[in-house]
Length: 631
Image (tube, rainbow, N blue to C red; front, side, top):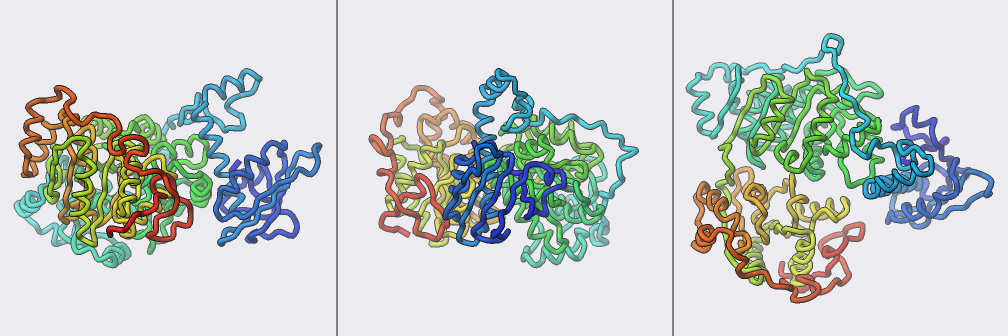
């Protein structure tokens, strides 16, 4: 549905094949960029009207949308749209069509088997039904692994590293001392020496100019060793903690790699593919690529789920040298023929451990199987579990590896960790106490982690009712609202963000001063990942965890983390470690904070956050009016 185009108004990003499918006419008296326009949809069987009208009217910039059927015998429909706020009627129609397609896809995902059974019952081929093509409703089912012949594949360059004289002149003892100073270990053959400054990396002037314009004082440890590795064209693995500068470690070499390849031709897919576990991380990577690729006019696109596909499809059709994607949505695009990976020669797997933790391994393998085997592959991870090692063995050739820090699970030593052993009933008062302390700093940014989406909303409603400028972010929020929450948090207009683990994965916000674990996560790996939101790039941070007897199963592993970071271990936590996981103890009564309905939330209430102009309606706890402001 989203592929339909106008006969008189042709989107230049559409392919010729798409121009020959379903058509939408712009009726006389209407203009392509007008805020009011009338269209005629041909080949419409008079069933689309209400559904399309509803989807178009969901757009806050649409003032009116109506439709009429010229004649029952005619297979067409007229629709008129009136907009305001800068959006044209043509854009509003395309957005409505995209949203309708996404709704149909969602219906298919939820009721796939039932839909398939009903279609087959009435003699319809479920592969060609109106809901789109899917074989057994499995992403990637239409993809086959290409049989690559390296002799016939176009040749490409991937080794661009020229060692600077200053680097070449350093003795092995000097190199070893530098690596020891930065807690760096390397593995493999013929590993390039690390650099110590931007000018030694061998980047072209146009890249160095962008780096210096950003005001970075010196490269981070992972960049000092990672840049020579990546620029040399070798497959590589980089292991470093979150916030260590991994994104720039592969982003800048990618720009050099792309500029050495032939220009994209119509129908080509990307040259550089970056796979990331979450849409938030994908968007952040895109920002870095945009920042440093601007001078080279390198285009990029971000492909992730949870939003309409239309704009992503158009970006891919237009041509983008860099594609940053989450595995599921990219596989969907490949499955439906929206893009291809024939030109990919630089592949990045970012936060590989998180992608595998989230169950993306089958999708990753299907995607990588579509890429020529002589590509350059870079894998980045915060940890080095067996699952990541297995993936590296399968898809990286003769790779070299750099680890910054210990491979044992550890928290940053820049973070002060406070473990407060309490009952469930005490959590509200404890949270208020720690917020009071944290928010004494007017530049503070605080992330509060909750175990469930419901708890996340309850905490946010409570805090807003008490006057704290807090906003919630979790998987039930629409992408537009999630983006807004992040924007408000980054700017400091809403300096408290309440989040679930999934929503916060990959989020990189500068200046987070405090992390509060309202609920201890189910394992210490997630604990380390959570508190790693603060104490980044050499800054100090504080992490507070409300630990109940119900969490006693994590007590031993948590003590190991605390001991390694030379943190205080409260006697109550040690006592829980000795008791193990016996009994439920205190903290498990009904009602929790709210003692009845509403929980933390004090009712639902209307109104919006008064910290800025949203431009749309927030949902649930984020629309809870603020009480008397405390900040």
